[in-house]
Image (cartoon, rainbow, N blue to C red; front, top):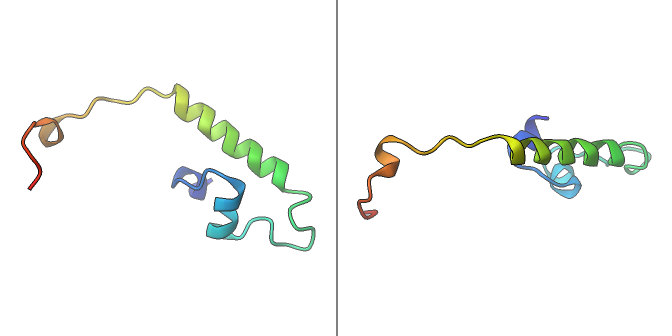
Length: 64
């Protein structure tokens, strides 16, 4: 779950980052479960309210 939380939001991204699906069965057993976890994570992210930015990030000064 850590890799998903860090932004690996596809099976291929997870394969590159942590090597999922590279075992003997070549993802025949795990792919659907992993894709379901990614889907659930994305669904939770889309329903989680995002707090507004505060402090220095909100000052409208130009970037240096």
